[in-house]
Image 1 (tube, rainbow, N blue to C red):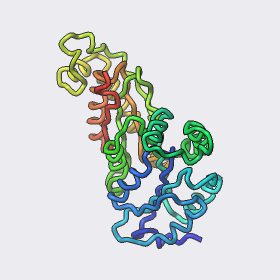
Image 2 (image 1 turned 45 degrees about the horizontal axis):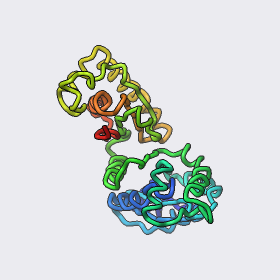
Image 3 (image 1 turned 90 degrees about the horizontal axis):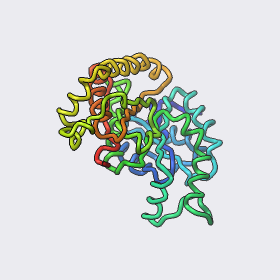
Length: 294
């Protein structure tokens, strides 16, 4: 039976960190430690309840984070039962899932010259296919999904730091991500908005080589007739959904705004949406996924 009183530092926060092998769980674990979390890596799911009871209680700990992945073997059927037991003891359980494309993961395994833990005598890709199937339910139920395909270790740390600051001050956090449809829709987006209805600054010669971060492009984009109304409606949508998210235990939302190449319109609109959300009391992190790819 769980004893809530022995959670690290008296906190009732439990974070499950899981996801694809090679997607950056070690980087996330180090970032959480730097933020004051007590982190246990590579724990079999059947031992989760014991970890909650046995973890030493440093006074400054923000909570307990446990990394669970395919190295623990095919034991994920035990995970839900363990998590249910922890929640029944009054502990707030959240799940962070790390995702990446097969291409990126294969490249990372090949560069490290390490096998995938589930590939056996097959290929790395065979292990990835099996792992995705094994983790599919965890991914669909995760509170926060971070796609690390195009993130370096520093960018991933910033995502973690933005998602897990001081829990007492900002109840809802949003990542606003600009992207180009030509490069694909972000797989970790909760909302996807298309701003290709705005005239493209690319066809204005003096704006073509600039980006949405430049004042001239920003002014051109937000001065279009429909742009301010669009920003108002998206901000109102998120404001209206915030209480529901929090009620359901979802504290993070990723909003993706796309244009053709992710250079002009989506960048400017993402920056403006972020500014509006900050005024509404939502802590935001702005990312421009495809800026610089053209």
